Length: 512
Image (cartoon, rainbow, N blue to C red):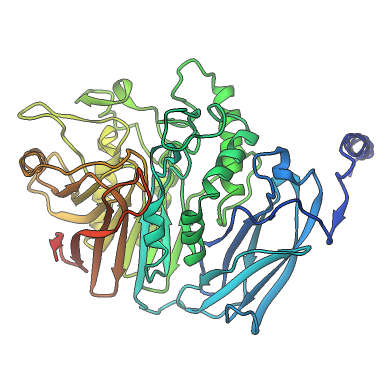
């Protein structure tokens, strides 16, 4: 190191220690005023030999530093064959530090493929709850997969009852498609109120994640099995696009600062394996995860790299700006990564973990066409370009999983939606919200018939809360839409509202 840099760093660290007495103290015998594992445990991004285990120490989550007072703490972790931990197969020690909100991301390796394990953390006299973790099957294995996907869990608009039911499902995996938190200020008239004003700083986002992760139902669903997580807009700012925020008066510098804070807090609270970057504002979450030879999940980011929404955003008539071929939702590098990956992948099924609806929805009757500028419909050239590549590389073995719009949809995807005679090349299952939008309601048959007339690729629509389960093998993909009738009070039952099947290599989606 250059001598001047060394002296400068030494002076800065000395000043930090003077201001924060505990800055460099690490203890293995901490004492906590409350349970340091109040935010639960989680696992994610499984491989055939391991995965990521997560927790965050926060005995008092809404106080500065989560009530940790800046103290660095060693945390022991264990992975065992049994929930009694009589057969520990991996263990280690890590340090929880204030720079990362005392979060831990343990990237476990050396486990056996296609196996269930149990894990826990301990520090001082405190022991976390026990979570279950499953490794992926070995390369080449066509092991069946049972998983669920969910999105959009607005704290103020409903209880997370759907997660209570999900936590009882026999699942190998959960995919979360974004809007894990909402950034809005607290509303005193809400069912349950957000803490604080609209979140903008890293401490704001940390407190908001802590509030959401305090929910017992969400914690139970995380303990059930590993999750694969991506983000959408509300993890930063509603309908943001790149460095363009919802408030048009925010500068690019302000949005970049806000995005860095939001992305850091997201990483601190999720069980993810993502590459290190120089700036949190440029955190890349694009990645792929294999389930043996059966399925490959392509985890997309449709927010960070997109062009700004065309024609003023919202639902608009067709406009020239939206049809500009230079505009995209993924950005050129991510689109190339996805297309090349689909072409090279030998997995039986290709699964796109996607945020916004890919199938177009014409909201106007008759000859007029009105579509959402925030969804793939606002980027029709990029959408059809991707679907054309899917037709070439992975036709009728590609399934798109989507969240965002707080309702259930089943769409047959064509390579060119301007030509209805084009063949179906993929299936899209759009899942409703966990809580966003409140209870929802029944959809009159006449309305659904009208929607289908304007959108012949639409097979089904429902406006209730819940989640979606999928059972996949080498021959077929089965999807069940699991709905709850209300989220404004506890105790809602769950029902299977609709069932669908996709046969591998055959176009179309059929009811079951």
